[in-house]
Image (tube, rainbow, N blue to C red):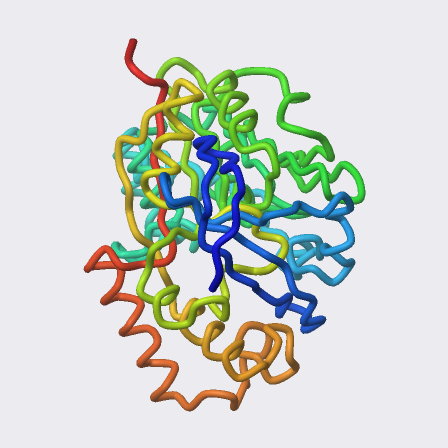
Length: 341
């Protein structure tokens, strides 16, 4: 680690900030890129953002590939009955109808999630206080297919839109529309706006948060899930931290820098929940061994991977729970709303 003079793009501090050099290891090109960490707000950021970012999102980049789930469907009558059951589960309505339907059809699998799983659909819906299936929901930077929006559609939500400027074209999946466009080109207000690990890929951070504030309904909520520093995994693995994801991750926020970014856009963070998974541990361990994330024996893409033993994978899960509970996690979900005047 060295020091060099740069200006932070989050808080505008010009100083000799610590310098780190990371390698592209998702695909294993091992191309090196420089980051600096702001002495004032703590944000770790790519020193020079490549002009052609699309180069680092090849056709086999996972968010830009259509998953098998997108090709599957459900019987329309089952969908109607499950929606009625979800209406009771989510909004406390039509208990009498539900008492009959539960004898015929189960609740959809998308509703279920571990109480400790911040990203689970049921947890987020409960946390943000959606009131009906007609609440408009926007997913920013979702790639070619949004698993989040697909889960919401399975429950019965109808006003679902995704937006991503890096996909090859507009997409439509049932009641879900995904537009190949920038957030600033989207019209309307939304009850819920989500960014599931997409903010760190966006070059103009403040402009993005300003657009989010503009697109939120007066009582709307924004959920931003991102990697954060400092964390135990960052301290242990340094630039082999899998969440650095050189050079696609342009910004790795601290709690301070994300709060500052939100404040400058007229938003406020009202809750933070940590959601590190085993991935952060085994991915970082792979990088420390010089193994790309997309290696054919990687647990990330190969369910039968032998790279780590069952005991090691279980240990990674245990460690993830420990850092989430202790506040040392490398991932977090930030819940934002319009700032009170």
